[in-house]
Image 1 (cartoon, rainbow, N blue to C red):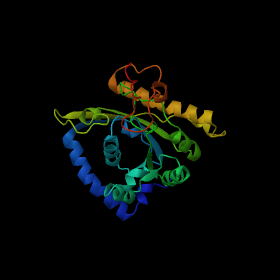
Image 2 (image 1 turned 90 degrees about the horizontal axis):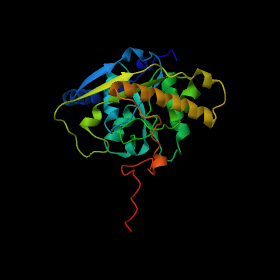
Image 3 (image 1 turned 180 degrees about the vertical axis):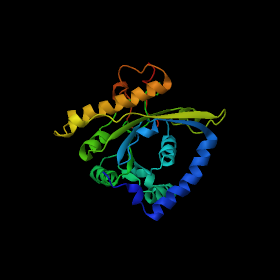
Image 4 (image 1 turned 120 degrees about the horizontal axis):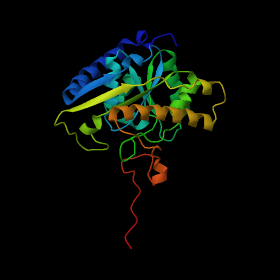
Length: 257
């Protein structure tokens, strides 16, 4: 992965990124102070970035940081977002990758992500697949998409944790809370060690093992940011009667007798 995508981006893509950054970055700087830790750990070639997922503005926070570090981030984004006026056009123009909730285009999505990585680009994947359901906002159990892509491509996996943006825009909130001014900290961790899992077959157990390592790395980083001890076991929505998608994820309460 020595061919750096930065040198192969089209003028149109660079222009659209620059226009969006010209809007987003000043707004983010007004709304929040920021601390970016250990960004020198980001590889120069292609890599998969795996952050935790606290709130719906996470992509803006992460994108702001990655773009400011000189890279153009690509997300595997919900296919439905590409149908939203203006937003969909921006996603397509910046080379974001649509993913169907049903998984019907999973192969196409992974192929597109693989091309970005092979050209030295950055793919951002939230391994949890959605906003964490943990009541204390710790990372929850992950899905295997990031692990699968990493084992297929050999691309390094870089964990990231952030904390603070949920105070500006709480999970599934309907409005922001800009006062007092908030502060977000993003921390980059060491690459997740997956070499021992790359050579064999990509069985379910192998993918699960790789995913658990990724989530453990993210959790450790978040624990350092929060200066708190994380739970011994990651939150599993299915064990708590919660749905894996949607804003109303808690199980309905039984009717009174």
